[in-house]
Image (tube, rainbow, N blue to C red; front, side, top):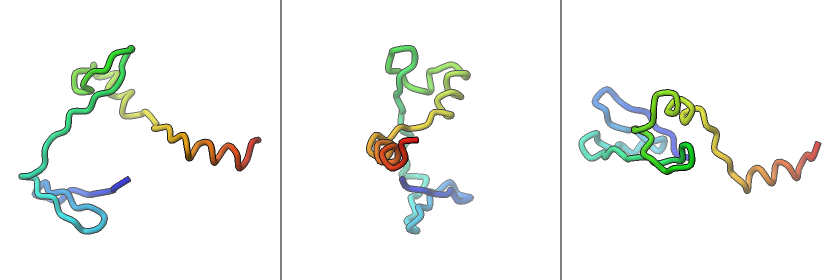
Length: 72
């Protein structure tokens, strides 16, 4: 996962020092499931958007390794 920060002009600065100017950035539309349907997250109600922000991603390869290391 890439980490970044934003400067005063709105440019993104990646952890390796790469600068992505605000002028060339594009807003991405994120889709996810809510009540069984894929919909843009921006169209969800405020409660569902907050729930989406609190979600934790599941990584099967990492989870399987950690469970096998300590089954109790």
